[in-house]
Image 1 (tube, rainbow, N blue to C red):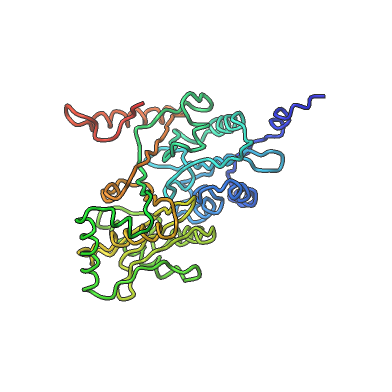
Image 2: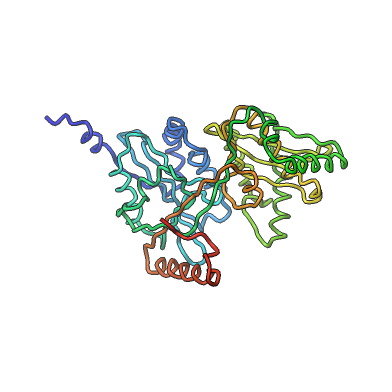
Length: 379
């Protein structure tokens, strides 16, 4: 009788691809148990993915492709993917990618590489997409076990030129005041000057919303300010549309998970800057931030950032992560930057043509005689 335990474990592993709302709801308890056991980021939680799925504005443009690995009746891996349609292409990507800063798998320690490879192969074989684009991968992401160099299962993936950065603030400051004092005099004077300008306009108050405080008024104000900024720049986002409940629903996920930290800077009781943050893994993460441009002289958005950085240090958090985005102010504040990488691969001829066209476009964007405008692959 063969008593070799690894073989027995492999024999009990079975795969599943979730494609329906009903099945997504049904696996919620097991998914949530795995997420809690692994202390996963909220972006990989069942609540985050299912809330996104239940609130998206154009569901006919998106299809679920959530891969699961089971060991008997216990869930041991989640590969949260979805297919979206954009510009005539069907793209396999992270579920809720538009609102998720770090894409990744959720894995129990005993989940084998072989099972993950088989799961990825099955998702690719099921088809329904032209290309796969897995973005915003941290250097230590579990997803590299499937999508890393040398993996030859499913469709062939290669490093994509698209890279984003995550600006971080970390140090050995004993207090928030010590963090501020560690900066040059001009830096500190700029912060005090901004606060003074705002105080000339009214009573200024920085605060963290209480755990039981209604979120609606603050989120409505945030959405209104964001929509104005988007309209000014010719952009739109479902996250802030008045007709859709996406923002309120996802902030509700953060609150239910116990990670929400919603900071406001008020002028005479009216928020002039708002930051929806989450605190996990000893880190304050700034998810959505906005400010009222009517008070731009005092730069309320920057004043709020300075205040919640100091708050985070005072409350013992190890670092502040300003998440994805290349805004200039992040570089000025960051002590270090983490590069997020992406992988891409074609499944159909249309996907191959799209990748080829993108490469040609990147070459045309090179500066004459110099380095490329966008970051290139360099290994």
